Length: 287
Image 1 (cartoon, rainbow, N blue to C red):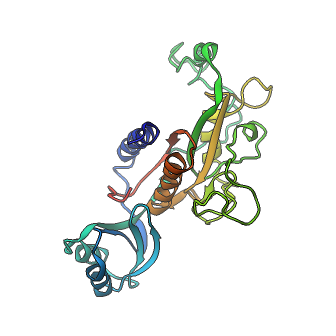
Image 2: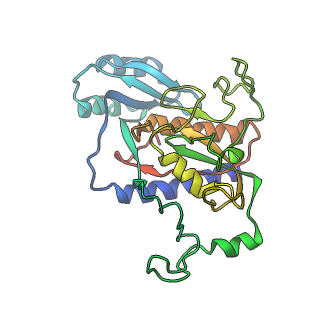
C-alpha cells in the first residue's frame, strides 16, 4: 500500500472511531428504499437474481470499489432486503445507505473566532495556561507549506473567503472547459467536487461547518485578516459530502474518499490526509 494512501486510511480510521463514540446514542437512520451492495467477482446472474427477488434496481456504481447503490421497492422492509442479499454467498456485504451529519455546532458568538485558546491558551477564559497545542512554538519551526495537501470532507468550503482563498487547492490536471481533462470522471473539478449535488462547485454557502473546519486547518496567517489556522500555508481540497443542512450519506462520503484516493494513486497528487468531522449511522462495511 502506498504510504500516502495508508496515511489517509489511518486518519479516516481515527475520525470514524471518534465519531462513533460521539454518536452512539443517536438513532441509526438511513436513506429510505436504498441499499449499498458489493458482490464478489463473477457473481453475474446470481447477483441479478437476488436483486430482482427484492425489487432492487441499480442507481450508481463506484467501479473501482465494486459498490453498487440500489433502489428497492418503496416501503420494503430494509432488514428483509439486506437479509436476502446476505443470504447469497457471492455477496460481500449489503447495508443501508446511512445518513451522516456534521459533528458539533459552530456558535455565532462574535468572539468565538477571536480567542482561539486551543492554539495558544493564556488563561483568557479562566482555563489552564498553556493547555493548548503550542501553536506559536510550532510556528517558530514552520508555518506550513504549499506542498501539504489536505482533503476536507464536509459541507464544502467558502473557497472565496479572503482568509482561505489563497490556501484552496487547484487541480493541476483540470481546466474549466466542459471536459474531463484528467480523466478521473469529474468534469471541470478544478477545486474539488460537490458529491451532494454532483457538480464542480463545492461551496459552503449557508452551513458554515466546513468553512469553520477549513479555517482551523488553514486560515492564512500573518495577513492582518480574520484568524490564523494551524497551518498558515497549506492547500485544502473542498470535498462536499454533506448538504447545506449538514447531512449526507454513506455513499457521499465513500465517493469523496475514493476521489482523494484516486488523486494519490493515479494522478500524482500527494494528499497527506483528510479531515472528517462528521458521523452517525451504523457500522458501515462499505465505508
